[in-house]
Image (tube, rainbow, N blue to C red):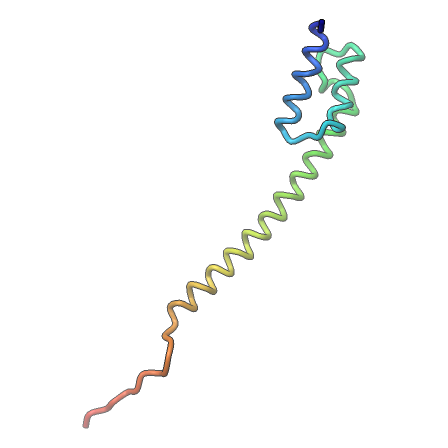
Length: 96
């Protein structure tokens, strides 16, 4: 049989995993709850995990922005190439 405290631990794990936290990253939050705090966010170790996760996400977003910029530039080059005529240059005939 599990009590309310156990349910809070499981809920905390699920919320953090929904945010992309790995199981090991949830440990400070669970330790905080086990120490009697009303929230897993109340301890300095939890705050540090939040900061680390945000830094990780910022790095991923920066990488995705770089890839998006490169892809956008490649698309512009490809579209420009399609608009260029292919084959021999047209001849200009002057009538006089």
